[in-house]
Amino acid sequence: MTTSELTAPQVRKEPRRSRRVMGAGKQMHAGPVTYVVLTVFALISLAPLVWTAIAASRNNERLAQSPPPLWFGANLFKNLQAAWDQAGLGTAMVNSTIVAGTITIGTVVFSTLAGFAFAKLRFRFSSTLLLLTIGTMMIPPQLAVVPLYLWMSDLGWSNQLQTVILPTLVSAFGTFFMRQYLVQALPTELIEAARVDGASSLRVVWHVVFPAARPAMAVLGLLTFVFAWNDFLWPIIALNQQNPTVQVALNSLGTGYVPDQAVIMAGALLGTLPLLLAFILFGKQIVGGIMQGAIKG
Image (cartoon, rainbow, N blue to C red):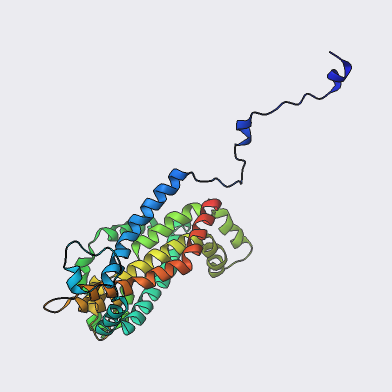
């Protein structure tokens, strides 16, 4: 062995396989099988919505034939206009937006406050109260219809929107959901540090609790809005056709000796569009909040 060979640095080539190993922070790429599976599930999920749109674009005679239509017809806008006029969806859309929006804001705020109290505050009978709160989820909502209706009648709120809003401003599920999230996502040391700095309870909630709970609040808000928009049992009892929500108004489309299925499908499509619009507008923020909470966790 020569002198140059002794002094030359020995360069060891790494195996090519190790170069493919991803480092921290690098984004992983899905394979073709993943895309195929996601595409199949997306098509299955979109199938009911696409069929509703196809049925809304046909007439009642064509929908009664076999096989059913598999492509769009020429009556979509005509049926949409008929459903809008027959059900009075203009007033119903405004009412549902007010009801669902108010319920969503109230549920998110109150459930976050209650969940924070159960998760981080120490007070007597906290475990008992939490068990009672969870226990209310096991009671069928049908059992509360009669006493709730009598209560709202005594208040003079029959056929008014507050009859639908007030009973659902806070939910046991939302309280339990926020409690479980804040137990892990909100360090107790952070609250104690804020207390040491002289922060009041309101300031702790506004500057510490709400920012930490924002991902869970976004998820709870989306679920609550969808539930409040689609709620039918209590609104059909508490409201009438003169002051309806969307689901109550759509119920009037199914009346008659021979219901027009195409118009009913058009009304269902109109009632679904606001939910799709809400998810399109706020879905990115909601998913981003979920990912932010996952990274912090």
